[in-house]
Image (cartoon, rainbow, N blue to C red; front, top):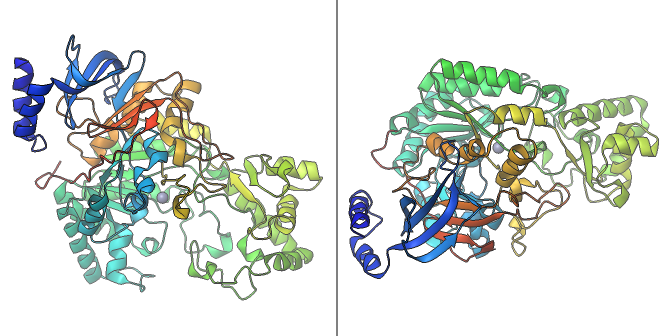
Length: 584
Ligand SMILES: [Zn+2]
């Protein structure tokens, strides 16, 4: 008891979170709030597990060790189970749900049940609310289950300064105004700059603009995390003839990210990094060479990678859009161009396709473009039908379907577009496995690769925006558990402590968090307790909304959000603000 009092006194000195009055009440009542006994502790450093108990008071870990006959208000027996720091997601789309009024959205069960306790904001360079102070206020006003790390979104500040007139490089004066907004965000407690330079409006920014904004976070010890300009040999979805202004080298995105570290000296993350498309298979060898050389040069370059061979954007048709739209539509704009969202644009899509398919010359172009799109989604043996009126098509690859119908796979794609769902573009939901496991494994074996989900809250059935959708990506329910289930347990590609480190200590280091990401006395009590034997993701492409198994306890700031395998109603998440004087 005496020893514990001394430790707690030290904690009080360093933590305003533990009010002295509350502490003395606790000491007179019980020694600890929560005791997790007999677990195998994986501390987040990459070290192998060790047997110990963990004691929690308030929102902090206060003791780690063999705690003998210590008592607590609540004791969890973790015999045979692993205890790790809570998982931290470097690329999360949870921000929208976390500020939503609906309680179920803010519980974020699909993510929290994977063991996620902390997510970062500003995904793909966008803030839900601006300024950051308003985003923080929105989060705090209602409460949320997971912790939130605010980030300044590049696209958000670019939009604030340039408005609709953004299809051009920013002027020096505009860049200066953006820098001021970035500084304002950092002063409000953000941890760095998030970007989505493949998307509008950021894709029109020059590398100089991004460097200038990254320089603005440097004095605060901030970092840069990017959805990069390109991940495929060419941007997905677009035809070669429409993408003359796009980078054609899949490595250009990574080169730009590395150059930002070189120009500014800050930590950079190539986010949800991947070698996308059949022609990019194997590119991880080149990418890891690039990152290793950069790190030898003294640049802090990191990756985060999600554990799926299929990527985001939902299930998609494998047919060129130009074959389905009105003749007058201008297709020169590139990805997410406004010309693709005109109302009535796809009216009579089947009639347009039928007419063009009957024209021998256009038929050849359509077949060529289907081949191009399918290759960028992994190839005909890796694109799977996930939704079609004839259920015997579902689960088959395009190659299998072509064989079964006695036609080429391109003809099978057109057949589905003409005969399938009348209200679904392309007639079918299809999903490509456009990333190769060999590349994922290669990235995962690097010590600079963190884990990400790129997932949003899903499965909230009474809120359409967050409800399960057919064809949704399984990562919304299974990303972090899948990394362990597939790459540790099934494939034995990496060790458990190395995987846990990539989800905890490493992202905490990258962000600059000072009291999360590791199992340490004095650290915030963000914990996951899991049964490795049972641990697995269940969500699949065909059934994307199944919860993972084996994560039996999730604790956020000393409060269980998952307790003995069931959800609690607790919303203990905090907005984690960068300490004012922190320069990391
Ligand atoms: Zn992204």
